[in-house]
Each structure stands twice: as C-alpha cells, then as structure tokens.
Image 1 (cartoon, rainbow over the protein chains, first blue to last red):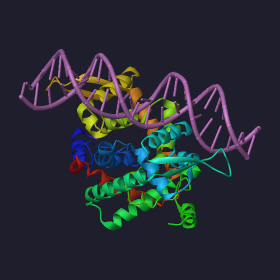
Image 2 (cartoon, helix red, strand yellow):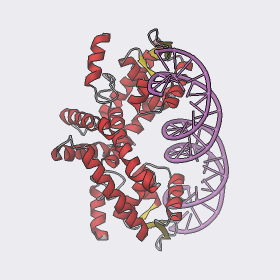
Image 3 (tube, helix red, strand yellow):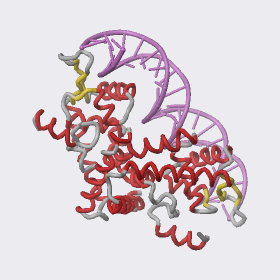
Image 4 (cartoon, rainbow over the protein chains, first blue to last red):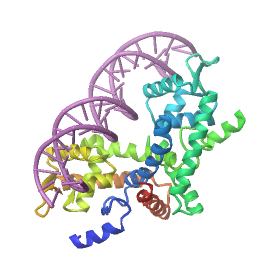
Length: 163
Length: 163
DNA sequence: TATTGTTATACTCTATAACTATA
DNA sequence: TATAGTTATAGAGTATAACAATA
C-alpha cells in the first residue's frame, strides 16, 4: 500500500484516523476499539461519581440477578481469580453494599447478597449507563443494537470451548 | 423474579451460568464478556509465546499499516496516554521491533517504523490470532462475523462524539 | 503560547503461591 | 484428596504532574 492510499484509507477508518488492514479481522482488536466508547461512558457515569470500578459494578449487578450466588460463581462469571474476588467482595462489604453469609448446607460456601444501599447503588448505575449508552449508540438502529448483543452472546458462548 | 425462574434463566445465559437481566442491554458488559474469549486467545497465541501485551501488539500492527506514524497518533488510536506510549515504544525499541526517527519537517515529531524483526513478529502474531479466532468463532457464520465487525465499527465511531 | 514527547511517580488491577477450613 | 475461600505478594497496566524541546 502506498503512502497516498494509506492516507485515504485512514480517513475511512473508525478511530484515531489510522488504517488497520491487518487488524480488520481480529475480533479482539475490534472489541477493544468498541470498548473505548463504553469504557469512557462507564468512567463518566459510574467510576467517577460512585467511586466504583467495572468489576465491582458487575459483581453488584450479577448478585442482584442471582440471589445467594457464591464467590466462586462470581469469579467464574467475571473471569477473575478467586483471590481477587475475595478482595472485591471485601471492598463492597466495607462500603455496605453486599453481605456474606455462610451456607448452611456447605460451610465452605459464602452466599453473597445485596444490601438495601447496594440495591439502590446498582439500580442508579444501571439507569445512568442505559441512558448514556443509548445516546452514544444513536447511530445504531434498535435492530442493529439487538443484533450486536446477540452476536456478542454467541461469541461469549465460545468461552467453554476455548477454555 | 423468583428463585426458580432465576435458575432457569441462568441455564440459558451465555457465560458462567449466571443470569444477567439488568446487564443485558449494557453494551460495556456484553463487550467485556465477549472479550474474555479473545483475551484468552491472545494470551495463548501471542502473550505467552512472544512475551508481548495487547498494547504492544496493536502498536506493531498499526505501525505496519501506517508507515511513519507518530507517537501522538498511536496514543490517540489506542486510547493510551502519551507517557505510556513512550514507555511501550521504549520496550518495543529495546527488543528491536520498532525504530524512532525525528521528523525533518517538525523536529518535535517522532516517526515510528517497523524493523525487519518487528515485521516478522507482527505477521506471525496476526496469522496465529486469525487461525485461533477462526476456530473459536465457528459458531458464527461468515456473514455474522462480518456483521459483527461492521457493528463494532459503528459503535467505535461514536468515540468522537463521546469525547 | 501551544504541541510533541519524556521522566518521575503513584495508583489500580491482575496473577501466582501458599494457607485454612470444610467436604 | 478435592473444593471454597483467604492471605501475602509480586507483576502488569494506567494515571497525573512536571518538565524539555520545538513550533
């Protein structure tokens, strides 16, 4: 590719005005580029106002959707190591957002649940994210957004095989 | 949602067997879940055998596609801060994969280029990633994969507005 | 004055090994 | 012997502030 054609291609490329022919078919790169948008939204809507990272927020949302979930299940769902889940749960517990209770059937297991404050917080964050993402994704039709979620789900399901 | 319906929904959910109703429409979460697959592939195909992180690989690929690109342009394209780009370029230069030359038109600018070893390395990584991702995404048709890339591009283009 | 790139430094997030308690 | 969770610790990655050189 000559310098001139590279410059032309660069103007048609999505981000940063750089050409990316070799990266076009690498899904990991495309996901990372798209994540730049959602990461900025998360930072503005959740991280800065609430003082909470992506892992912490996702734990709250998953606990809300899965009552009595265990730390082990959360670690697997988030692809985070057991020691780190323990650390995140410590932080969330110290802030009064989650509670840990021993299982009566298996004393090794910790059941994680949301406090009232945790429920309020995660609801507030979800609402803020929905609104901000809705605005940012105005260039995609509702059908395209639904299709994107569906395709990402299909890709995510490859996790069991890839592991 | 009752405990029983939560359990049923969990079996239909893509990852980790956890329900995620509140997170379904949050694109940042869906991107992160899909990235678990590509991150594992990258780790196995590039990070471990080549001793190279995602940022380093992407710099090599972008430099290959954009000869004479500047450090500033790379920082913007990768959403990385200028100090960190300098650090990554230091590492890549020390390994003999990139070279930095002062611009003759503007002495502030560094033109980054690939060495022969850098070209070999990035070609090898791109090929390995292509093969591994092709296998992992076998559940998606070629049309679905193309659609996914197109939709991710559309989302990534929202960066200019979100900033 | 603004811009490119760099140094110094602190912070966040993640990974590994070793340990306790329970099954 | 295997599993759930934890502690300690090191490493990778990222952020901000202050600076030098050039425009």
